[in-house]
Length: 551
Image 1 (cartoon, rainbow, N blue to C red):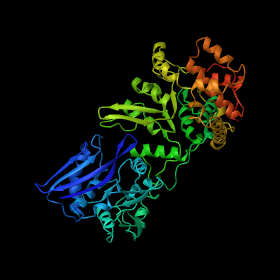
Image 2 (cartoon, one colour):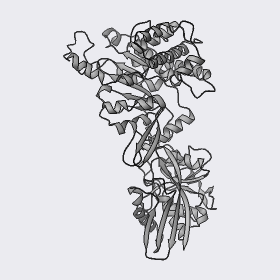
Image 3 (cartoon, rainbow, N blue to C red):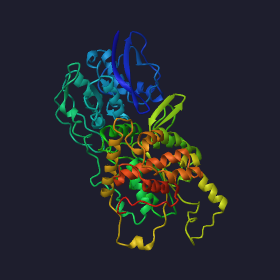
Image 4 (cartoon, helix red, strand yellow):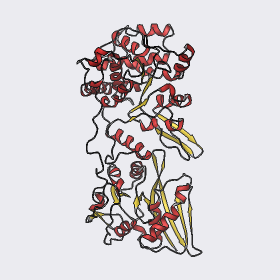
């Protein structure tokens, strides 16, 4: 009778749960039982593991095999357990020493030929391993660069089960051709170097990804140029709103006819957002890793993401869902970046209303029969909409034929409670010929981004020692009581609230925007002009528009 154990990771949303993989061999009728709440793809690992072990030249034990995944109460799915299951079986059959894998964390799918295939969610899995105290992790070679982002963890990248068995037994490591598209045909390098817990030697070729397949190859030779704010003609008010949205983490609603530049403006918002911190980059990368959309050659997402789902997207696609445990939706893929909903009234009402929770809390909780998952969703929302179904309602002489009831129905698809959570609402007018062909252009992205960065630094210094970093995150009560504005500055906003033009939430939003305008202008606290400008950006009623930059 043989017993061995190793470890892997089960993903619940974007968080990892350490799972002990136990293998037990007993005399009896040959059978393979897998227990521990596995899903369909994990149950199929029995056939993948058997074929991989045989095709790697190893002996399949003709005994009663039982593999347990502990804790048994946690649902487990995916093919990332294959490598751990295979090694636990080989150790139980005394092909490798059980002690050599007891303190190893293994993540990877096995092909029928024994090759180790990449899987989703390697970064959050390795983060969970590090938090649990594991210091040695085995992953597919092509995901090694992603796994190496976690400090304090030695990462072993392998191409095949044969190579891993040789390393664990301190035997000569066989050459394996890298079958990835970026490295197909490259010979296997020499291996030497790193020590594993059980005493086996790991080659430096493994630590470098067996020739560098995961170290940056496969990226674009000439990445596309980032959209520049200088490309936007005119649109002074919309440019100001975009800058304020970036400086204070405020949500934005752009309303105007087709061709006015709403999409162009939204696409330029990520470029003026502050760069992600190291912690924020790891958060974003973990979400994108679970979703399987990490770009080739870029294991770390270091720029604010931009997610623009089509208006036919369902509610699960927008906020997360799917069969079994929920997967990240568009709101999570836009975490720490921008979620752009073009033609927002064309989205289903159910999908739009589902945005209300993440807009307030910065996360989304998705409940399914398989469990409840909390997904990060702190993003800047940009809504874009035409004024009517044909888009010509606000254009003089454009010949809009939409009936008043059709216009009301179309505009009513964006509910009051949803728009009440949007700080900035701007009418984007059609660009005139003089602005389009004129030589005068607004400021470029670099200039605006520098001003945004300075405003964010002022806000961060003001909120030091609190949970908040940007004006858009601070609760209204805290902002009113701990950081008062100049005396009399709120008179115009309070008057609009008395007239029913602002809700209590709307008043707090105006106050947040006023603080952002003050930060952009370098004021120690908002004055009456800052509040009037914030009020105009909120309601569209002219109270006077501050000029923060040159355009």
